[in-house]
Image (cartoon, rainbow, N blue to C red; front, side):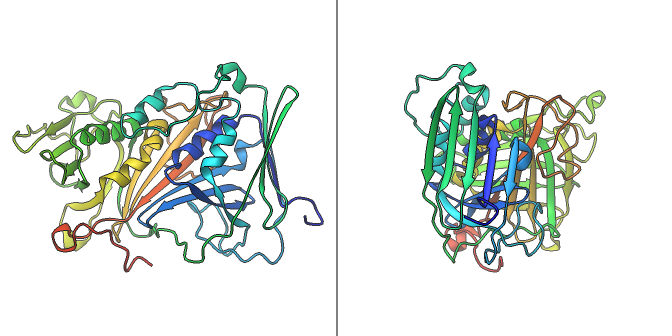
Length: 396
C-alpha cells in the first residue's frame, strides 16, 4: 500500500452499468485491465485478430480515487484518446468471467431484456446458473466497491446491500510482454459510417441465417450500391444486405427508416431511386478508398469474429463503423444508460458520437450517461491465395 492509501478505490451505486459494458466484451476468459485517472480500461483479444475495448469512465462511479504508484513501467496505447501520451499506469490481467459472475451475485444482468434477446439471435449467450434474486428491485439500494491496494495485489470487489456484504478477491497477473493491441490509424480513416446499432444488428442477424464464414463490406459514395454487407463462404448461397436510398424523397435524410434488399445468387436486386449519395439509415457517410481500390472500398473479415460484437450491437444506441488504410475495422458502439442504469437501446442521444465524444458524459435526458465500447478486427487477405488467413504483417 502506498503512503497515501490504496492505489485505486472506486464506488458505484449501480453496478448494472458496469456489468453491461463488461458483458459486451466477454468473448474471452481474461481481460487486461489498466487503471487511469479518468477510468478503468478493459481490453480483451483473441488470436490477435479481434479485440474488444471497454472504458469504465469515472463518471460511472459515485467516488473515484486514484494514487498512481511510482516506478510503474506500463506503456500501452490509449483507448479513444482518453489518456495523456506517455502516462504509466497500473496494468494487470484478471479473469473477466470471474468478475462478471461476481457482479451477478445479487442478480445483476439476470433479468430479461430486449437487448439480451437481440444478442441471442446472433450468437448464443453464455449459460449461467439460475439466480433466486432476480427481482428488479434488488438491483437498487446497493453499492459496489473496486479496490486495488498495491502493485500485484488482488482486485477486490465488495458488494453491499442492506447489511449484506460480499467481498471477492480476484487474482491479478502480469500481462504478457507479447500482448499488442490491434493498431488503428485515426489519421488514416478511409471509411466512417454512423448509424443506429439496431440496423447493423439486424443485418448481421439476417446474414447469419446462411451460416457464412466471411463478411464482405462494400461501400461507395459515388455509385450504387452505396453500402452493402454480404455473407459468403458458407454451405448456402451468398446473401447480401444493402443499405440504400429511400425511394420517397420526402423522407430524405431520416435515420429511422431503411430500404434494404436481401438477395441470394438466384435473385435480382431492384434499384432504388437516387435521392442522395448516402444510404438513408446513415447519419454520417464518408468514404475515401485508397487509389488502388478505385471508387469503391472493399474489405473481408471473418464472420465469426464480427459476431463477437453481438452483445454490443444489441445493447448500443448507435455505432460508428470505421476503416483505416491498413484495412483494420473499428466498430465503436455508443451505449446510453438512463438514471436507473438500464441501457437505452431504442432512444436517440443527439450528436455525441458525431462530435467525437469518447467519455461518459451527461446528455439531455436527466440522469443519463453515455459510454463507449470499441471492437477492432484485422481484415482477411485474398482468400484464394492465402486460404483466408488474417493479416498480421505490416500493421505496426
